[in-house]
Length: 177
Length: 177
Image (cartoon, rainbow over all chains, first blue to last red; front, side, top):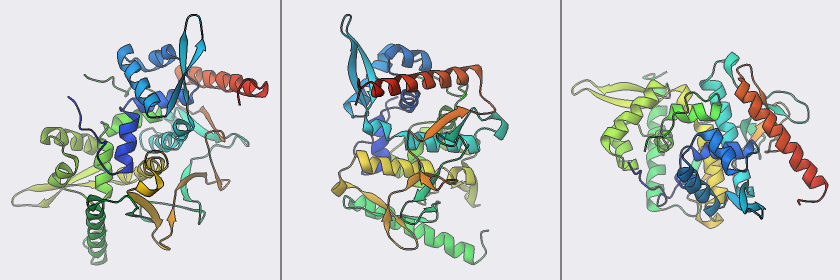
């Protein structure tokens, strides 16, 4: 079943997902962070049909997340290297690691942890506002219209504001905890 | 084409993706953050076939990201509310927003921006190490084996360490910039 394209959605989440291409392409990017660069390395790791893997690597190259370059002239062989745009995706991967470690695995079952390369100390990354040096959460952030907001964006934001106000009113009158 | 299940992969990224269920379920979570709770709201927003939407909402309920609760008795109608586990997914959504704003949209085309709810000031969230209060990047983080690491996890980490060492050796001898 072909899914709907998100390329026309005026939303950075939808458009990011569109550029990555497919669910398991996130695992492809994960493997690239793990140092994999060659077709057979990705193939073994992901158990993906070669024609699908070829297609998805091409999508990542086309959208500038990976660069294809030769590592052998005879026979001609290519490897796939993360570009700065692809490398910057580590932030999404790390928040997925954190969320998974918090909510999918029990404490004593977590397969990997993150440590500070300098001190070796284990830590859980958190999203901060670099201007205030405070951690942010779902309530401290407000989503506002950017320069490229369309009518639909404004409608969504108005809907959100209305719902937030309703929820706050409900909590104040004790209808919700 | 049915994709491979990630449920047996001992990896927080793969298992998180598995729990969410499907590529566009991320947009479902996004819409829930936008205040949507009802079937027809999600349906209109995503343009998804009703049977697929039913299935995906059920997956999110089953995996504890959403709670289904009645909002009307006659006729019986349900709404879908983010649980704490679902709400905590905002960190992944915000890093996707940031990545998209940095790499997919031009500065003057960004549809939404994030602002501090108190001050109203626009900011870009960044991942910090809360212990050192320093921003982290792909080079300051080391991935280490957790208590649930399997033989395969250790192999992956050893592969990564070997590749990192090779890359560093290459840069030191000037073969790469």
